[in-house]
Amino acid sequence: MERSWVAVDFGGLDVLREVEADVPSPGPGQVTIEVRAAGMNPADYKYLTRRGDPSQLPLHVGYEVAGILRAVGPDTEIASGGGAVGDEVLAFRISGGYGSAVTVPAKDVFAKPSNLGFPEAANLLLVGTTAAESLHVVGARAGETIVVHGASGAVGVSVLQQARELGIRVIGTASEARFDEVRRFSATPVAYGEGLEQRVRDAAPEGIAAAIDTVGTDEAVDVSLALVANRARIVTIAAGARAEKDGIIRIAGVMPASAVFRDGVRSRLIQLAADGKLVVPIARTFPLDDAMDALKLLSGQHPGGKLALIP
Image 1: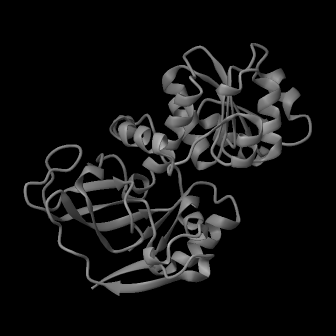
Image 2: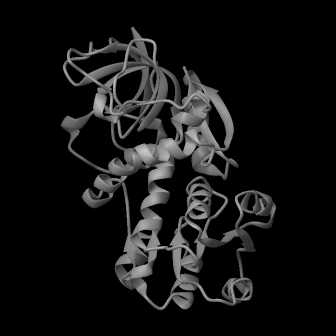
């Protein structure tokens, strides 16, 4: 029997239960992963609040993991090729990652770079693909300067690193306590709060070509609109209502176009991580049994890096 966390209803964290169940053996096109770390993202608990068809219950929580291949289905290869029992792998855009083992489509499983620990590998791709899509949809190019709101957060940190690889200069908004994290990834920090627009202008006299909002505040959207004339070059991952009202771009993993892009960029991001050009700061790990405590930390404050569950 394996342990996993499921949601028995739609709602808040109180609907989550830790259960024991058999993990099905993999069929053709599937593999079973013995989970060594489950990545944690705000999307995990936001998923619970979306009202849906009760026939979908229980909901299996967790979109990404890293671990060891326990079994491989007949005539099956993982997405990066090959795949044998005992191989270290990571998987993204799966369901049920909060567990001790999971059977998933092999097309979503990749060889884990040897230089990444399991917690880092389990947290690489959701934020990484979100960051990559953000840079893509605003058309950020080498030699340009962009502003990233929430630059010290998980998605923001990935944007900074990917922008650096593309030759893009970044002005990153953050609290002053997080300035060193922004500088660590070669961006120029500016503080949130009154006067933000002018501080960004002072930091980038050459002008701001595009804006990426990862926090969803009115301040972030208002400053982006003031700095970037072309609204097609402003993207948000968190301010859906403002996107609809103001005509800026919104992206999300549940959107079909976002899903296609994110699936297509996974291999490139894994290679960047293997080359040491994309790192995943980990703030803390929790035993799988303590998933509720981890989710409360994730939903209630800035943890200062990614969290992982360790079965």
